[in-house]
Image (cartoon, rainbow, N blue to C red):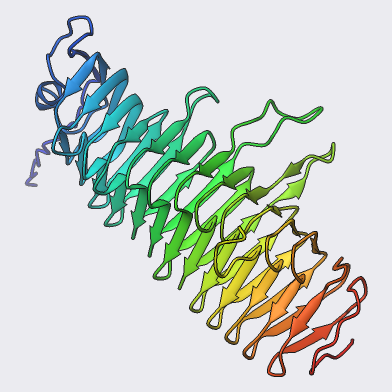
Length: 396
């Protein structure tokens, strides 16, 4: 009998060892390396690695094909004529406690990279976006405590999400940008701002705040904006949210002590929400659209929908608008359910040019309630709706 002996070579893949190094930039204590770029070059691609940075670094840091890399402050990174960070083809990158700046963008994230920004300030992108995420990037944004939020500010635009997915999980502020605070272009952004404190509940605070921009949020080209829990959009020069071929969904609820875990959109000069060109707004929960619209601004209203757009409000309060509470134009539709529209300087709802309004139950719409031209239709349960006259008005 003949035996054959087969020798098998077994290859063992040993995991890379974690490496922790330090960088001492100008004004900071000496470190293992004088720049972040030098520290990155000394590390293998796989990680996990942590680079702890101090001082003010004047450099543009390229992270390409990196995995499991943390760059930790507190420190300042000024990219000069370039972004402070350019991140491509990388996964599980964490930037924490850093202040970043660059003229075209402070942080550029692309090519399917996944990045977490924790307590990061991105600012002074005078020609572009403080944070620019595109090309399938996945971005998680948060701040560890209320006094250390992630902030995108003082730029031409706050953040762009183009064909990206982004998650804001509380303690995020986008403010003081001369154009749009948050641009969602064929991408998706979700917020889950932390609950406010309530008796017997978790310690809270930490909404997503978008304020003092031109438009607060712009959603276009099939993009989607989804807001959950506790958010604030206020004091933007145009609209709080403007949808141009995009969609927005707002969700909220009442907590056990009656506190609203919901979104407030207030003090914007044109609208709380403007839906244009086949856009859709769905707001469900105790959201408040307060004191929007300014006397000298055209097309002002609490909520405006035009060019075949759709608005669905359930449990929402639209109050104190300069102009109508809800304005529907150019074959746009609205459905109102358990919604209050009151205290606006003009009628609660205005319909023109083939628009349609459906009332479900439990609405509160005092006079002046509804006006519509002869091309528009109002129907449904008019209980709680003050008397009005339209050429085509039917009751349930």
